Length: 377
Image (cartoon, rainbow, N blue to C red; front, top):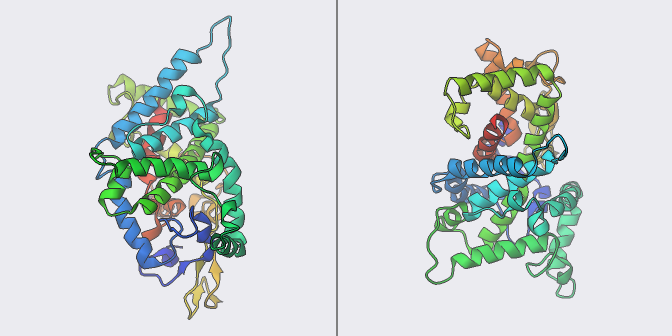
C-alpha cells in the first residue's frame, strides 16, 4: 500500500473517487483524480488543517470538550430519586460536529449546547454515506450524474444549495459561510475557512471543501471515539489500568483540565488504548481503489495488468501477524512491547488507516486532539 500511495507512484485514483464530488463539476481534495491538481489543493489546505494558519486549534477543542463535561454536569447527573439517561453515542457525534464547525468557521454550530442535530447534518450523513459507497463501486453512476448535470431538464434532480434538505442544504450553509467572507469590510478570520481563502481557493472550491469537511471530518472522529470507548468500558482490566494512569497523573499535577496533547503523550496506556481502538475497527473501511499504471505492476509476486483497479483491505491489514497471535482481541498492552523494531512496524501498519504520502488525511491532527482529550475527561 505504501508503494502504491507513494508520492512518486504512477498509480492514479479510480473513477470511484468522483462519488465524493459535491458538485459534479467542482473537485475537492478527496475527489480530485489528477495528481497535479490534487497535490496543489493539498498544499492550499494543509496550513488550515495543520493549524499553522489557525492560532487556537487546541484551545478550541478544549472549549468544546469542556462544554460537553459542563453540559453533562448540568443536565445528566442522576439523583437517588431520578435516573437520567444520556446517549453518549450521540453526545460524541455532537462533540465532533462542534469541533469541526468551530475550527472551520470560528464558532461551533451548537450541537452540544442544544443537544440536537443542528441542520439535520447527522441524519444526512446516515442517509447519504451508504449512497456514496454504492457510487464508489458502481462507477457508472458517477458518469450518469455528470451527464444529468449537463441536461437542463434533468439538472433539477441534483442537490442544490437552494434545497431545504439533504446534501443541498449542507451546500447552502457552506455557500452562505463562504459568501460572507467576500463581503466588503468583512474582517479576516484565523479559522480553517479563512486559511483556505488566503491560500487561493475560489468561492466554489471553498464551498466544496467545507461541505466535504463537515461530512468526512466529523463522522470518522466520532466513529473512532465510540469504537474505542466501547472497547475500554467492556474490558474491566483495561478500564482499571487507564483509570489508574489518569488518577496518578492528576495526583502528581501532571495534567491540565482538559489535558493538553503534550501531557497526553506522556500517558503510555492512554496512547495504547487510542491506537488499539483505531486498529480494532478502523473508521474508514472503503477500498480507496487506485488504477495500475499502463505497464502494469507486480504485487506480492502477482502480475497485475495495466488499467486495473486495486483496492486496500484496511481492516485486514490491521489483523496482520505483526500485531501478534491475537489481532482480533482488543489488547492495548501490545503497544507497550519492549521490541522497538516491532513497535515501529506496528505503527507503520496502523498509520495506513489515514492513508499515506500525498493522500494522507489532512485532519488527523484534529482527530487525535479530540481522542486524547475526550478519554481523559
